Amino acid sequence: MIENKKPDIPIGKWVKCPNCKEILYKEDVKENYSICPNCSHYFRLSSRRRIEQIVDKDTFEEFDLKIDTKDPLDMPEYINKIEGLRQKTGLKEAVKCGVGKINNQKAVICAMDSNFFMGSMGYVVGEYITYSIEKAIEEKLPIVIFTVSGGARMQEGIISLMQMAKTSAAVSKLHKAGNLYISVLTDPTYGGVTASFATLADIILSEPGAMIGFAGKRVIEQTINEKLPKDFQSSEFLFKHGFIDKIVERKDLKDTISKIICMSKGDYNG
Image (cartoon, rainbow, N blue to C red; front, side):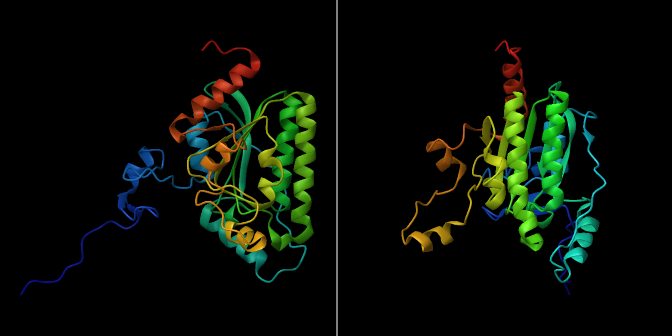
């Protein structure tokens, strides 16, 4: 009698591509910049992986503001969900911010994380982004922000919406101070983040295939009663219409950002 044994596949070693449905070995995907080797689909990166890919090794010094998420609306289970996400992801909130070097170019770097409440912007995220911008002004450094977000965190009501004004005001101060601001829009960047600091940069970059917008495509179609193009809100569509300065492949992002920083200082020799 032949036993019907299950395949001996190590748990956690494989991942399914959401685009082509291919089962992939995680290490192969990781070595390929977290891009599917079969169909070139871009997997979403955690803030930790993003910093690993962009920042020179052992140069990142993370900010710790000693502030905590509040529950202004007394939403049921909100704080419990925050604590659960902290244990699951190892993150304090939906963004990591600090100072590091990108190909030896010192900069303030912020990386949002979709694993924590879909990168939504509440009080803490808004405060970290604002602090980072002010730190860039204080230390006369360029700032690079990688966005991924579902928008303002509605569990915090008007407090979350106020972060749009606060971060936008901070960017205005940054521009007046003459600091370079590079925004890198990744998949997805929506809502109040798109409507505030994400799209106020001197240079706006994006990864291929990223979805970027304010409201969702279906909501817009229902509002205007018209069918929108198939590629509407993709980075390619936005680049074509002048919303994005350049679409950059993930493997080229580090070099591209460092070159832009060098050019802003007049140090780039081609």
